[in-house]
Amino acid sequence: MNSYMAVTNNQRFIYRRIEDENLKLKKKEQLKNLLVDSEFSMKGNCAISLLLTKLDIINTILLMKAGRNVIQHKTGRLKEYESVCKKLEKKGLDFDFHVALEKINDLIGVRAVCAYVDDIYHVADLLEKQKDIRIIKKKDYIREPKKSGYQSLHLILEVAIAFQNETQWIKIELQLRTAAMDYWASLDHQLRYKRGRKEAQLIDEELQQCAAVISSLDQKMLKIRKKIDKI
Figure (tube, rainbow, N blue to C red):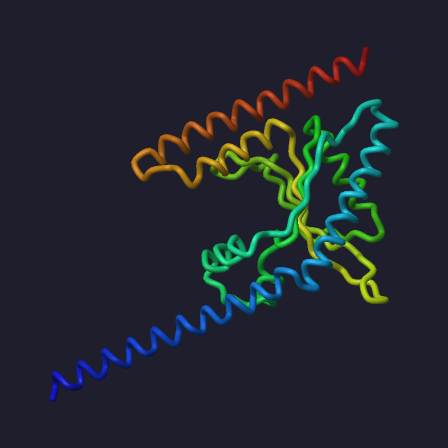
């Protein structure tokens, strides 16, 4: 009898696991449909285009003042479906489109690389004055770098776009950084998935040292530029 009950309970457990997995797959498929080739992706691409245009205008304004391009290059992207799933799983969140919209700030992202550290804050200040842009949150990883050494200024924005005869506010993350910060972040991203367990701590320490060197370099270059500006 006890043996029969054990088998029955085990079967029930297996059935529940199968049902849970099927439900999870169904939710992930629904999430994919709402993220990819959907109204969300159209709005997201509109928001990216608008913000990139805003950055072009800001660069032109600062070019007239400084006599040089402040923004060296910029890119925009919609977060890939697989990356969204990984982030939801990491945060312990449900595979739900509305949860993703609320809890993941970089579903839509733009990155701009500036020449100097102070340029980053000039760009941010001009963005803050735009009537069709709202700054929801600011994360300054330049003044307070992450433990890993990562540096960048993150602005969580809402951008107003005209869609289906009405104005809609779309959340988008803007990352502002120098070329040196961008170089470090790119290498860190590449190495993050290749670190072995034994070597991980040593690599992390070396990357932190590189981040400190990059920060020092950015500050030195800024001081040199300011000296040149005075001549």
